[in-house]
Length: 126
Figure 1 (cartoon, one colour):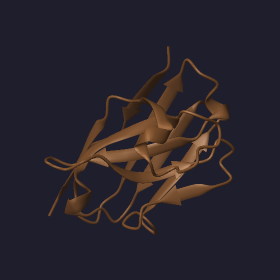
Figure 2 (cartoon, rainbow, N blue to C red):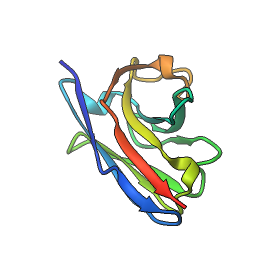
Figure 3 (cartoon, rainbow, N blue to C red):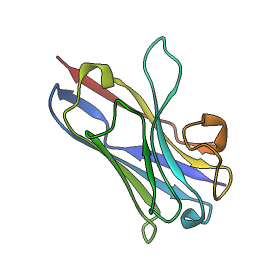
């Protein structure tokens, strides 16, 4: 079955950086888009970033633009999220997910994703 395992979360001070990674197995990784979502306490899960199956296109929520970078390595079946200039409002559980179809209509919609990881906690202190 498809498995997604996130790593790299932790506690960091505001202005610091973290790099999240997600290792995928059980599916042809290079055939599907990948995304990162996050969920803060008491809030709904929200889109953060996504990348096309080929890596040629990336998508970001407005709050992530200029601070976060999503990348993928199709030879290693991994997707990463480099997060710089972190803010306390970035505190959340971060999830990676893989799209249901090769070319989803809307990379920002959680319904376009078929499989999810268990999440990794990111805490940014002020």
